[in-house]
Image (cartoon, rainbow, N blue to C red; front, side, top):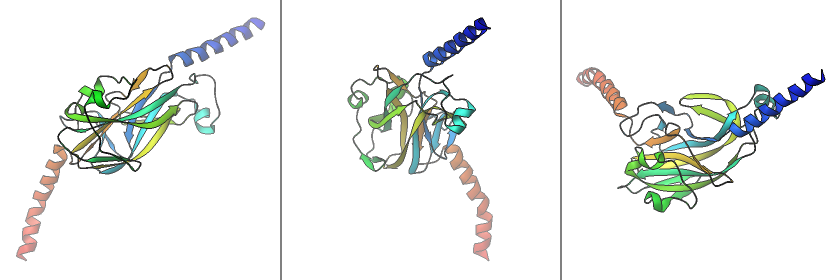
Length: 238
């Protein structure tokens, strides 16, 4: 009996250690009430996309799943709980290089955009995807500090390529965003932990604003207007 108890305790310790060691933050961005587009256009694929000038944007730090009791009751279950971690977080904003405009984040006006290296904060080293994937590769940048995200609570939803999962370990930062004067604006999340390591939202966990709908949507709109033409002519003749 004693041996079984010791074995059970060892298994529990191993599970705790394994959960703590393996958990790494997954940064995501999500535009509230938007649609996830696998292929929006040649300019952007696999992103949350909106055509609204004003929208709510979330930056999420997600360290892993939590069991149902933790998610529902708020209790802390040590099994699977990641070791404490905290990220100083930035919203990487890219806009068209040849355009002038403004992006407001929670009422803060941002109109200073520049070359990637000039805009990059000291000590921040994002993945290459932030700079070189479209539409950002055609843009200029601003890295806006938005605060810290930690993982000591079950408060981060996983916006998994269009499938929204139950809350897990981590947190979210909600921002009111207004874009004015730009044809598009692209948003990535970047975070730096206490050890100076940089984490970046994956290329398919990002978000974009486009001033005009995708070409397919415009085509459908055109077909719809063509379909109304006979009725409009009939009304005019009557």
